Length: 160
Image (cartoon, rainbow, N blue to C red; front, side, top):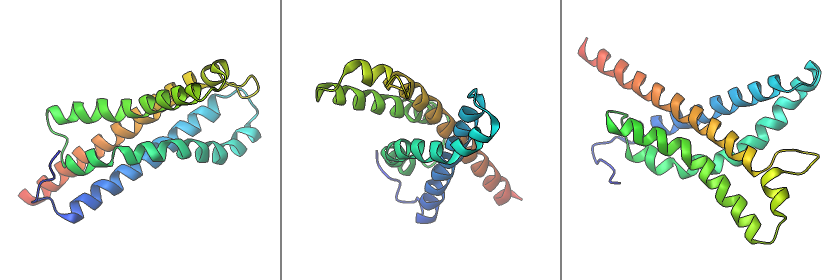
């Protein structure tokens, strides 16, 4: 990955802001859908949104940082780059969650508790991998759609 020298710092900062905004939006959408689909009463759902958001951001933000070199290197989402960014951005979260679960298992933790979860919490490694897949797909999709829309609007603005 080579950074284009013609890429302006303002363009890089715009893409980083867009990437971070995509993470916040996708995490918020996921938390709201996750809490609304839960079978608990409405008052418990509202009270669960903020803690759920903080927990998911605790795991999503480091993975977001892993994607930063790709966000900096690819300044547009044209042709083949779109699919590379979509697949890479979607899969980096589940892969890192699976590696984390394997690391815990190699440290000697209980494999059943790692992969299937604590009986009281019910969320284990398999569920975390699926959640990471959903959040990664949402984040990457929102970012790519926003990036393409901004590029299209800036080219339309320049030609008028």
